[in-house]
Image (tube, rainbow, N blue to C red):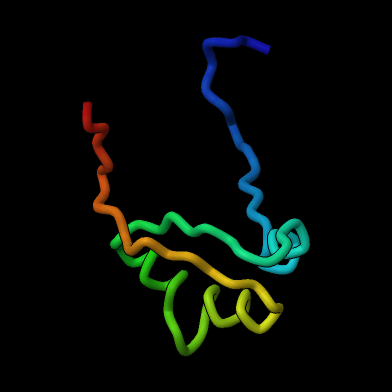
Length: 73
């Protein structure tokens, strides 16, 4: 294998809600962006937030952050 050659293929793996939520207990802090992905995650009628609450988790969402996020210093 040549370390300088590009990959011909790779895999993308993403956990599902059940796999992630099984790691949690009680309150969960959420850092979601203010874009489509973050809005989907906090959607009150469907998607991630109500599914997590139905499993007994309390979500703490300090509101979406703007991307690209920048460090203040």
